[in-house]
Image (spheres, rainbow, N blue to C red):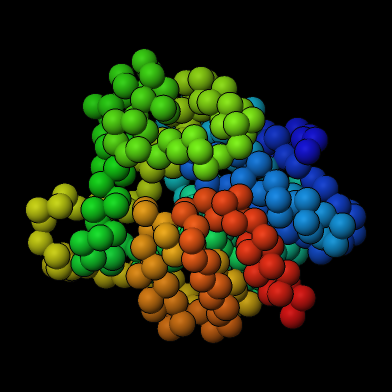
Length: 295
């Protein structure tokens, strides 16, 4: 997949795949941590003849702009990049498609732009912001699975990142390196990208700029005094949520309650698959998307 350099109105430069008919309905794909646009390689290959498929390496990743400083990775900036990318490519309306951290951004894009800029949303293994924080307070499994975030947010680990890169903190906080589950060439490409220390801190700053709070395991399993859920509108555009049910980081309890906050919701459960559903189970991901997009 060839990339082109796109400069956004805020000065951020992104390396972007832009394939498919330029006048076709647009799909904008946002990848998660710690990957790149190739998270979506199977989906772009499948849908590139029917849709305009746009997949950036997001800020902080690969060859795209990597501003240093946590303040450059707040959710409003990450969400804003998507709308500015659409502007730069003259895309008036689009379907947002996101996985993992890209899914978190996609939730924000959908909520902010529904009906105005965003026609539909497709989210893969990324928790809704109104549900995830409550699970961190109340659900032992989700809290245990998210303890690595405490390590990612801790600036005391900066020296580990400087010395060993992303692989160093991944090995320290969570064993995510599963060589057998990823094609060798894809894994080698990511390892090369992770050598860039600016990229390492860019990726980590997605966590550090987030307001999510992960309590320690010995904290009470209760909502804190004065806790109020985020003031978010209902999502009223058609929304597909694809969930790999063997995801060790995000258990399926993240699906509970979605029907109460999304008017037009389709849930596709994918069994026998871990977190990286877009390339671990591409046929099932593509089939779910095709059925949803053909409505």
